[in-house]
Each structure stands twice: as C-alpha cells, then as structure tokens.
Length: 353
Ligand SMILES: [Zn+2]
Image 1 (cartoon, rainbow, N blue to C red):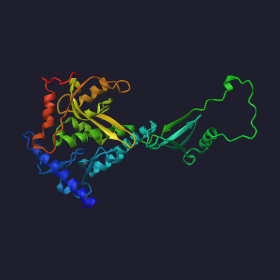
Image 2 (image 1 turned 120 degrees about the horizontal axis):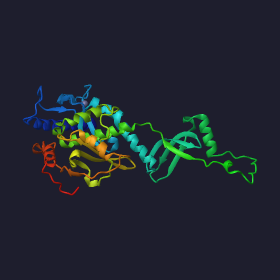
Image 3 (image 1 turned 30 degrees about the vertical axis):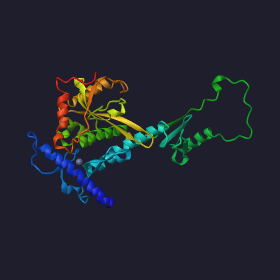
Image 4 (image 1 turned 180 degrees about the horizontal axis):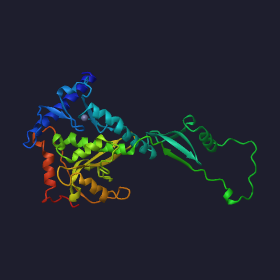
C-alpha cells in the first residue's frame, strides 16, 4: 500500500468512527439537526458539516488529518478538521508554540537546542545563533553580516581586543571612577514568536484532545462556543487565562473533571509536549456543560492567577477512566454521565482535597 493510499484509508477510518459516533449522539431525544443528515462529520473548530465525499483532496476545503498535538511536538492524527481550519492554525498558532518551546530549551541550555539570539556587550549588540549539542557543548556564533555594522564592530573589538604593539603603562594610582567598567555580557533570544498565539495553540490542543477522546457528545456544551471563538480569533482576548500553572504528577495526565470548589467545576485536560530537548506539561481548563460554565475562567483569573500566575489553590479532580468513548455506543454519553455524577450536590470526593 502506497503512502498516499495509507493516509486516505486513515482519514476514511477516522471519518467512519466519528460519523458513527455522531449517529449515536443524534439518537438522543433532545438532539435535532435541521436539516438532518446521515453519517456526517462536524469540524470541531468551525462547526461546519461535512460528508464522506469531502474526504476528496481535490476539493478546496476537504477533511484532513488533525495531528493532536501537532506532529512537530510528538502528535499523531487523532481527528479530522477541515483544511481551512487545519492550515490556518499551522501558521497562526502551532508555529508560535513550537518556537516558544524551542527557545525555552535554548534559554535553559538543554542538549539539542538552538536559537537565534542577540548578544550584548557594554551596550553594543550583535546577532547570531546559540547552539547546544547532544553532549552539551555550547557554540555561540556571532554574525557580523546580520547585525548593525558599527555596533557589531565595537562588540567584536571589545570581546576580542586587537593586540597593541606599544601598551602605555597603567598609572600606579587611579581614581576609582576611572576603573575599567566590568564588561556586561548578555544574551537575549530573538523573540520572533507571539506568546499569546502560543498559548492559544495550547488551548486548541486541549480542546481537540477532549473532542478526539470523548467524541461528539463533548461538543454539546454552549460554553465551548466561547472557546471556539477564542481559537478562531487568536489575537482577540476572549478568554484571558485558561490554564493552571502547576506541575501535576505524570499519572494525572489525561482528562479530568474539577469537582470542588464548585466555582471551579470544569474539564481539565493535562498533557505533555516533547521537543528534542525537553518535555513540558500543560493543564488546560475547558468549561463543563452546566454551571459555572465559562464563568470558571473568571474564577481562575481572580482566585488562582494572582501575581505571576503560579499561586496554587487546592482543588479536587476526578480523572475520567480509560474507556472507548468514541467507538462504544454505550459510552457515547459517558462523559456527560460522569459530569452529572461528579458535579451532583451529593458528590463527595474520593480523596480529601
Ligand atoms: Zn473547520
């Protein structure tokens, strides 16, 4: 089987799983589509409806593989999105996320990392690159041709002083203020990425992970309109803070329901992203189908993210068990059932908060 056809079969299989799952969701008495359809696929980002014929790659907006997380960060195809949504996020979001993570690796001097940097010495700067090899050897490269010519010249002259043939004797006594200034050498990573867009890329990964795992019933949630609005308009501040800055134990990675305090009830998607040099963990909050809905973001902003955003409040979560929510008919609404159970007034946590 050729590569092209393997991809075609892969997309058709994903289409079949999700469209069958959507058929089960449609059987629910309270759900009606007008006009109705059979075996369709809803793009989780723009909410447009697609049919099996839209797998045809000669169409302008065909259904394409969605790597969750992006392939460059260790992801694999786990759902489909329409080509418009998919290619838009590649350059508007994912590129910024990748660059942010790679530059963070370089700033931490991690093996296999590199970055474009600006070096500074006593007020003069020069552009260049910074590279750490697999065995930890750091190479600083200064590139005169990519820099301000006069500043670069001064920088290099100070860094590597020209040998003088006749050196005047230094005076025996020298007033303190005449002392040679301590040359201040520093390095800043050239910031050609947008941190906000990198953050929105993480929101997108969290949202798509939940959709790919829990299936179409996850989308039956009005709070997610706000999330999609944010994803479609990354430069607009629709939601200010949608993450929890905390390092969770590895075994907690997956989808949780935050159960207590009540004001914080929401889905919490915890996942890791891997570069060549490091693995970073992220925890993304998504509104649940009932209260507090999107008000959870106001709560997080006011209670959790004071100061530098790392203040941590105690809360209780329940991890959704590993089930085939997508492919088992009996599990098609299971995430909703867990939500009901864990946010019920009679709920008591299995572990103390
Ligand atoms: Zn779309």
